[in-house]
Image (cartoon, rainbow, N blue to C red):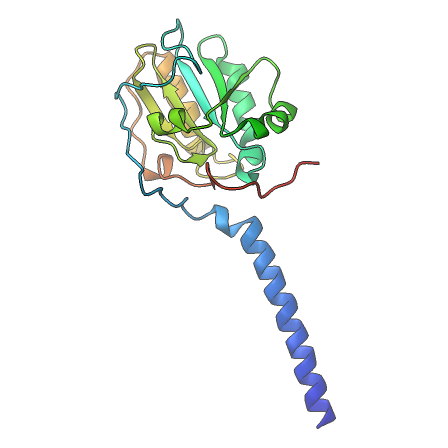
Length: 207
């Protein structure tokens, strides 16, 4: 009888530990592999649509195309994607203007710690830019032509670490854009939003 009770206690403890491990794994990994919930008021914005946004935040017309990088410094996916984004910025900076877009002023100090100083950070407090581009998760990019028409909107890569070179969607779109070609045709993996919701509360504390 005593052995049965002890065995039950050991099993209970092991189950608790296993559940805790699974919970941590879910929190850190699996939740970001699932599609980001689509907002109820979401409206799809397709390539070649004119992007109408607040000219106070960003110039309506300019001599170069724009890349709007929707970023949350407290989102693990945004942080894992950061090195790839900075690589693209350094590669295409002479041909494309890069902007980082955060959802609130509270995120600016954290973003400045991670983003290079020569990149302009825009505060999209009312999500005007995000909604204008059809974006509701981070990290995602919107490429806008000098005509203010959307060229591409979607994910940087199918992998949260941006390690799959065959699915570097934003990089391939940038290559086509600067070569004055039509936007590439990608699968839904390029546009189906993954990562953190723009409205999501901070889940990752910076050191």
